[in-house]
Image (cartoon, rainbow, N blue to C red; front, side):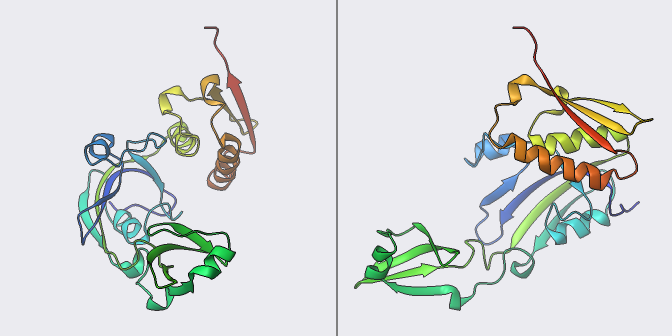
Length: 230
């Protein structure tokens, strides 16, 4: 049975660049390590997708919407629906002196920012520097291999998955208390996580999503930091 917008769905996926086969992203930690793209700051395992929130590529989201639990498939995403087509006009030529006046001593492969746009230094010679302001993945077709694990139905399961997604905390370390009469949700964060960089910004994003996605269930939200004696 197809899903609906607003459904909480857990999915596994792997994204490759069609033209090269290079691994771009995956929810599989072992595969990431095997192909030397493992990111220790990322949480691996099934990813939460709230359908309609644009948390995954729109072509893939449409495929998920029309699938069901345990569905597996391969979705091809053309450049126009991924990072855009390459635009020759975004390849600019600058004089070396001009870049030096801007504080750059460019080298091939450097990422530079000029007038608010980031580009990659592609070529240097004859006092000229060629910079490509296209996205590095522009013009590339993406191949998503997707497996739908399940749809979350239970309120607590949804909340924990949402907390884990934003705060990068394993669900087994998360406890929540919900007062249905007051519509108050309490989230308990283990003390070992509170020194994480940008945690407060992540909490603000989490609060915004909880109030948006649980309009009828949550009117108040409390964060508690829990420390245990060593």
